[in-house]
Length: 476
Image 1: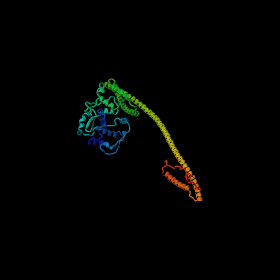
Image 2: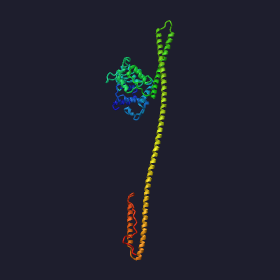
Image 3: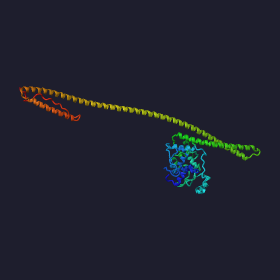
Image 4: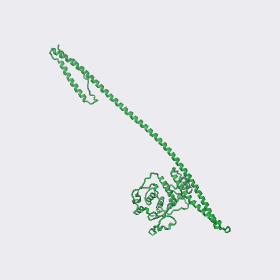
């Protein structure tokens, strides 16, 4: 939209006031005109933005956008478009179905009504062609409407495929042509268009009941080298929509043909009455010929009507069969989904079971770690208990030593009091006993300051010998 001229933007903004122009047909014609020369790149230019506007205005079933800015220029800025999550094939099918449901004659096109030709020289130059073909006027350009090609592009019925001629790659397309269908080899004449058509995956829908039938009919008429026997996956919804569209068109053709048959029968009855009322002696040969022609026309119309009725019955049968097939496929899909859900449920239960077992294993692992910790603590307590027992033994031995020392001191004092001579051995023992007690106190304080688990601890000290040193005997 950035390359649009302001005149074009204003014209797009005044879209509703230009009702006398065939915007939809012009855009579709331009779209088909670009099919043969389009490259592999996708771009938006020229008529394509207007094609989107036309589709949003006239095909609301495709997902009309939400108006956000009224009076915006260009017109596409007025909308916040809805994102379509459906597949491209489904979107194309919906477009075909929407266009197929438009009744015949519902859209009436009156080009250039009330317009002054003198102020539009391009319309004046196009007047010689108005009686033969439909020409489109848009943005100071008059181009022919290839309405048959557009109809076939939209998936309508066709007997043969037509292509626009292109004498030079840089020239504009000429008028559509049919050519000599019996001698023209279209596979050589328009091989580029055929190649583009095939590579882009476009389908040309005919009255055939399947793609294979259409390709076989095409191959029988135009050569087996263009036949492609690739089977596409079955799409029941698209098939049903296509059959409904074909059936709708067939019913309209039948009604039109029935009206023609009724009119011909009325003409034939009127002619027979006129012939019967005339004089048998002077019978008019022209009336007899007219009566024969009318009878022949009525017969042909009745045969065509019978064929259409048979075709309608076949379409109804095919539609019912396809609908039943879709129901069966839906049932199978539901069964598969149920089986898939059951499998998912089993897998979920198995996963939950595994998770429960993993949780139990983690719990037992924690219990084992707690038991190991308790065993280690019990070992530490036993070690501490042994140390405390050893310390109590040391204290008991010290108490026994003190008791013996006290007994010795008592005896020494008694001897001293009797003799009046101080006992040197008793004083020496007492001095040694007090020094030993100081050493024990220092050792105990050092053990208390030492860290837990250190090898430094209370050492067992042997009790002092009750014998006095040599040469220090009791005097008696």
